[in-house]
Amino acid sequence: MKNKIAITVLIISALFIWVACSKSTSMQVPPGTQQVSLYMTDGPGFFDHVYLDIDSVMVLVDTSTNTRSNDTTNWNNVGDDDEHRHPEGSFIWENLNVQPGIYDILSLSNGVDTLLASANIKAGTVRLIRINLGTKNSLVKDSVTYPLNLLPDSKNYVLIQLRGGEWDEYQPNSFQLWLDFDVARSVIQWNNQFYLRPVFHFFTVPTTGSISGTVLPQNAYPVISIYSGTDTAYALPNKKGEFKVRGLKSGSYSMFVNTSNGFKDTTINNINISGHNNVNVGVIQLHQ
Image (tube, rainbow, N blue to C red; front, side, top):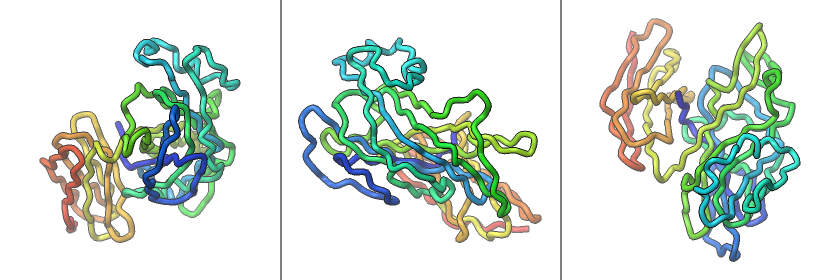
């Protein structure tokens, strides 16, 4: 199951910027380098806040002429190397110089992004993204703050494997990618404690579609599920009842609105996504 509410990192020449919904400007990329941009966004969860402590972000660049020749590489072993040695001559680790800090993940829902890091890196194919986590992860539920510890024996980083071709080249040698932090799958409650097992999905806005709309009234506490086959995304409307789910592949989707307080559930079928289109389902008025 995938949670498609989005995350992004924008890379602009040796600067790192801490802004929401930033857009890059046209600029010359020095020979032998490329710009990469990561945006961060969020999939919904039933908490007031989820705070993720991000210490650094690195990428592994394959500079060989044919990255397919390295497809059999044990990428988990390469990503597990804290010394960041280069097991193959064509592999280079690049630090994206992310501004370390605490990210309020749930503030990035319903189509909101934040710029995480920026840098110029060596030209080549990005095969790994490594997100190193700090120890100040926490969440707030019903106005109570809880520590969000990593699962025992788990790594203090997240490794995202890529094949190449996933990025959006929005101008020559300048690339961007969206990372969606899946809150529903990343937070585990056990023995009255909360644990963090970070799950990220990636997508590009120009090549995927979205579904948006408004669900009223707010006191129905609607939870939206959008599904097609085994692919499922979730949304929690904001205080105005508005929602947006991004990163959807082309296909036919159904939307199920699960309600509370005696309101009736609602299903909408045959929502067709094609390419980069947004389907607005309008205002859905729930009834008791």
